[in-house]
Image (cartoon, rainbow, N blue to C red):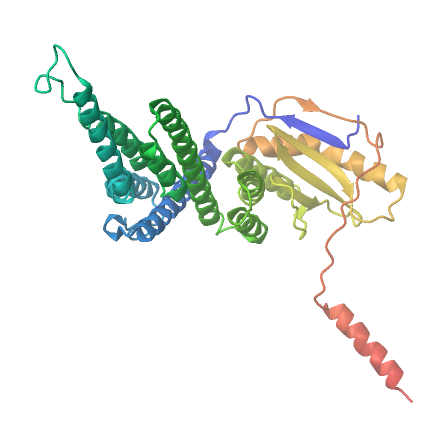
Length: 403
């Protein structure tokens, strides 16, 4: 039976000792890629922390990333772990320092309201004492002056000091709580202030996480061949008018980055198997076509003697597929079937060559030649002048110049 689409099921495929070095090299490349990605992301977090320190006026908590650890995976992992630990400690110190400063700012902002509250509470207690009669004399009356004021002010100060970022509206709300003379209303306003502080802190945390994610992704994709589209999305995510739009743009950038990374650096197993497929086909006389195949894990090869047909080899989802494709729109159906049958005749040799390269095919599925129209995969035409074109142009020019 001839075939136009042949799939090798790689579930359970074995890698023999001759190919162990190649497989190990593929895994090591993946480990290095992961380590370098970790380093780029942690240094991005360090830069975000530095910006936070500078904007807060706390440059003493800035962390320095140090020299690039190079290309040794263990050295990179060690450098990342040390830098992450230093960053966690610095973030904690900055948070403690910020809370202390925030409490001082709250005390200063609320000083007038606090003094007014204490004065009113003391006046109320004095009035109550003057009304005491009978068994309770002025001297024996319990002195609760300032207790209510202290409890209320401590609660308000605690809430406002817990703000991650200053908020003048919440400071004003705290002052209003201290000025109110109705205890029930004060309790209601305090509950509302607590809710608003939690909401503000959640928004601040989300905004910080968003900025950090953008910085990490920007840093981690800087080495891509074409980072421009991702950078554009990240730029828009930074300046988006609302959080939902910003999050959506960041998601788009992340998805695009994942696809770009997959296209440039396939998974280790995919890269190894694709190398084996390419080598197996090359051993049989096929040549790699000078066309860039955008799909990750794929290669286009030319069969000897075929001028308008090629073979598209792909490694996807633990399968190898080999498909005859047309490289010209002017092929005839008979030629399509002939090239499809020729590929089918090579399958046993391709499978044998794969085994020698360390990939043992499992299940092989075949489809008859001509069962479906061959897809068109047009070759890229070089714009560089060839010797034949140059000679032809010169000849034409000479003929036109002749008398």
